[in-house]
Length: 161
Picture 1 (cartoon, rainbow, N blue to C red):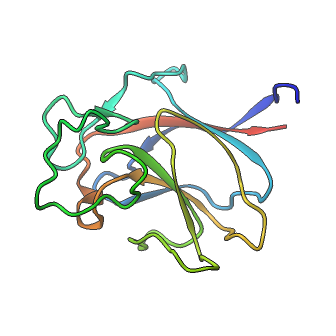
Picture 2: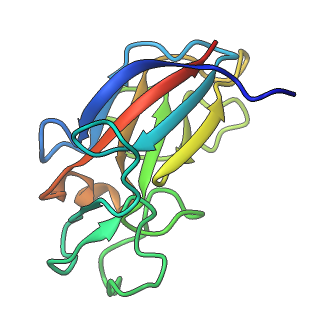
Picture 3: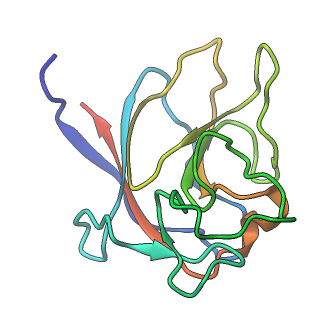
């Protein structure tokens, strides 16, 4: 399969936006079957893998969009991160649901899906019967801490043509 050609559909979006919200809606509707590329970028729109943000309780240096994969952040007594397969502090995404959802849907027919994004992600949006709806981005942390990010990441989203 040849490399896809990419079309920019969301440019330099701050996450979280506004600050202190758990989920930022970045697309009103993620088109089923489409291939999306989500990249952490700088103010010029160039890839910026070194960009950091500060999830609640993290040291002043924060962490990258890949999260605290070195486990420098003490997690005692602060609850489990929403997505178990990604580091605390990682950029995560969700398709469907609403800005108020704070759990991972584990039903046999889930109403929303949650996935790791990190500083770079290519994802094929699932087609029905998988959940369809808006695309949200947020920090992988316990639900009560997700709105506590004090700085922002900048992301751009591309769709394969």
